[in-house]
Image (tube, rainbow, N blue to C red; front, side, top):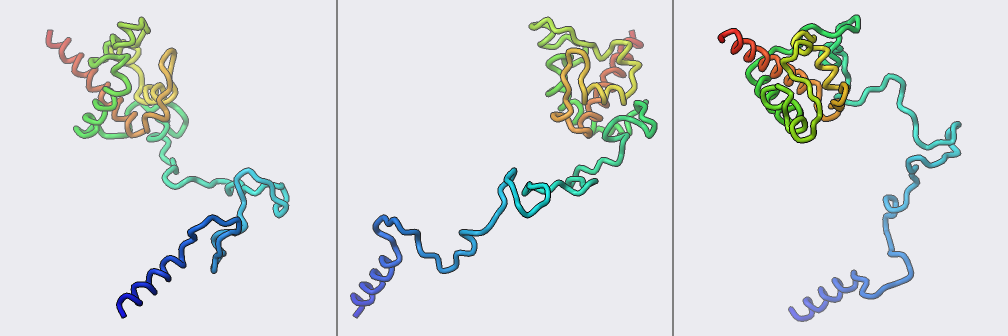
Length: 189
């Protein structure tokens, strides 16, 4: 009796398999998910008046996480559109550590670790690089430095997409810290 059950089980299992190729499509008892009407991106449509399947987003739509109401934080500008004199972010030890890390990644190759403008590109490539201790940088507003990081200036490329606003403010805090250390060393001499 157990042999019959085993044989019956084997027949049922093998009956479910398609052991040979067929030119006919497989049988689908519930085909509603296999073949359904859909609109492919950039395809035409007779349904909509403009002939396009893709719909434009509702005016004023903002992607999740992309609402940037704080102009000072996200652009480095005040309500009138002028550069901020000082960072809107408090320079905490954590922020300074993050700024040192990001500075090491994005700024150090050109400006070197101390901000003297004698990085690898300046030494090996002869690329003229601004010193962070130059009077024009010392007197520049934090908002202006934020804008330079975002948009680039001269030979410096923009870092808008690589460095998010929080990291730009962290880098600015680190640069200001480097400048203060240098000024303290020069005053002690």
